[in-house]
Image (cartoon, rainbow, N blue to C red; front, side, top):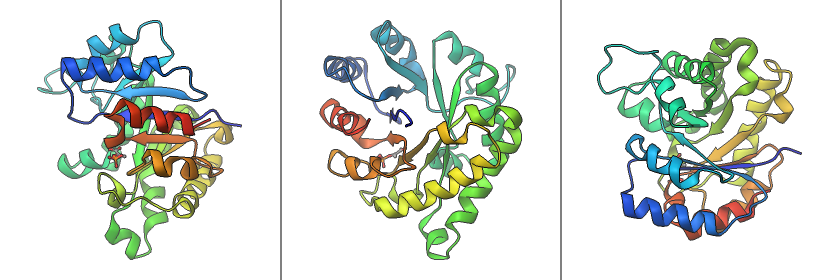
Length: 246
Ligand code: PEP
């Protein structure tokens, strides 16, 4: 049985006060049966590390550079994230693929850079509505994951994968548990061909997961947790999702 992971993606939200209240609300609700993490905007990593020090709540970033260091204005190196105690870095979120034209290869390079510094990449894959309607879902997610598997080689088993159908992110449209499970099974089969520990790897679902739909999604055999956007910004909602996890 895989221990589930619920990871919040705060996106570009937060303030000193809002973050303090949110983290305090989550900490006060412990213990949980699942692993927990919050992926926060870069400027808040420091205060998040202080607020969560000594707790079992992990923290991470929402992106990272594929480069070690150098003249890359505006980018943040994985070594810097490691100095803040980051445990996770989301890579390949659809908002970055879309608004920043991130390619499969760049996402794979970022995942590799993260692992090289001991940070677990949460690798997002997912199809657009047009791709789903055209029957391309499996081919798209397999292509996206394949680039990362190839880059990570024998370390592929160390990543976390997140299936995030683009049409379900921030839209209130959630994949049915059956739709999500079907894609997770495809991803699991792909991982089995690449990593000896594929059956213990975590594949998260992300896309409008909320307190009222979390339990049925998380009950699917290949769904090992959630990557939560909007609902991770309210302690009560995030806590309710964590309680639905095992
Ligand atoms: C996300 O941004 O990763 C996400 C899943 O967002 P939401 O939960 O708001 O759909």
